Image (cartoon, rainbow, N blue to C red; front, side, top):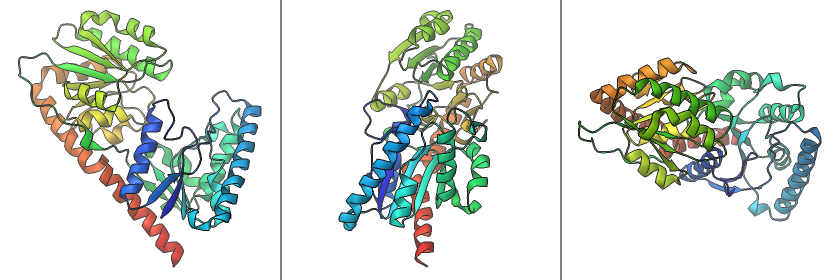
Length: 369
């Protein structure tokens, strides 16, 4: 199938790196591996972070114009028209103003991935985006869910519950290599990989600093990979750890993989995170994980098998979990091996491609019947 791909929050070729851009690119790779021909239909961004009704109206109008432009192109050149529309990541701040109208006009399936619906947003500053998401999800032929926590609020909008299809977060595990077991006498190297932004990221860094400050009686070091506008606040939060911390700055994907290959344990409180790609990267690198049990983290880290998940926001419990794995090299290595195996089995690119191929193939057969 020719698949028109749209990412309203951030197109996959956006110049600023982010987890969202990364997943959009992975989604395109998975669709190709599934045997389809995806192409970026539009680079229109619908994000409004301020709750500005006038700006949202301008974006919606731009979306209507862009939809009409695409339809003119494809009606003049029907061989270039898509067989299916696929939108990645829509929510009340970044709704899809293209896919529903274009797919309806062309009579093709409308499919979305990582949609979220928050009923509490009705009537608020993003009401127009909230209602647009409701309409889009109600129209969708398939909704691929990367975070099971989204399911409860999305199901009431679906025409049939079977339109929800679980799609666990994924990456290309081939880019990550487990580290050979280091000499037992070496101090464990902890690692955290995250942008330094105000809000939840900074909250995680602060909790990490508070937790690790309780472990100064143990021998360990910490690598921090990331940068951003909250750098000074992050450095202040980790200052009690002294010279144990090495700041690596922002690294590209290859650099992150190399840094993970040098580490022994991934540590990240994951405050209010739906799921973290860094958690998958760490496990693909054969690292056990200590992370806060928030959002969908428990869907990608198996507590007691591939890592430990203390309660979110609990610095003392986080410190206890890190202490356990710093002190027990055997447990670290066993969890690291289990983590790599779990990623290859459930979260690797071929596994995602197989799930996409099965669901889209079944949709195509059902429409043809």
